[in-house]
Amino acid sequence: MAHIKSFDHVGITVDDLDAATAFFVGLGLELEGRTFMEGEFLDTVCGIPDARTEVAVLRPPGGGTGIELGRFVRPDHVPGSPDAMANELGMRNVCFEVADLQAMVDGLAADGYGLVGGIGQHENSWRMAYVRGPEGIVVALAERIG
Image: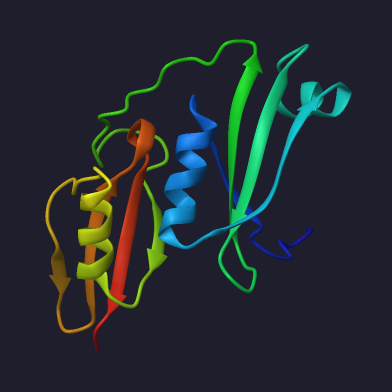
């Protein structure tokens, strides 16, 4: 059996690619590239004939696992549940380790992005909070404290 070599990216479909990209850049990710995709490759991989999408790939400074944001030009996107909570099926969140959780939460609040719940602490090791970004994307921010 073949084995996974690395974890490259997480893909998230969005309606407003500019707003979603700006949100993740504001968190500290760097834009690796942005382009349109269509043709046999995309049709085959996503299983949607005659699809066209615009994608932006962002990665942490210095590289690592990225976020691929995609906006479908055709066909139209299918609305999701932007108010989804952690117990709904599907991808729950994308998590980033941060150096100063409170500063990140305060900065995001100033940009209009609020907490889903509150800032929790797990024993004496982690502080964590969920922030709901554009289009309902939930980002977990975790600060190692122990």
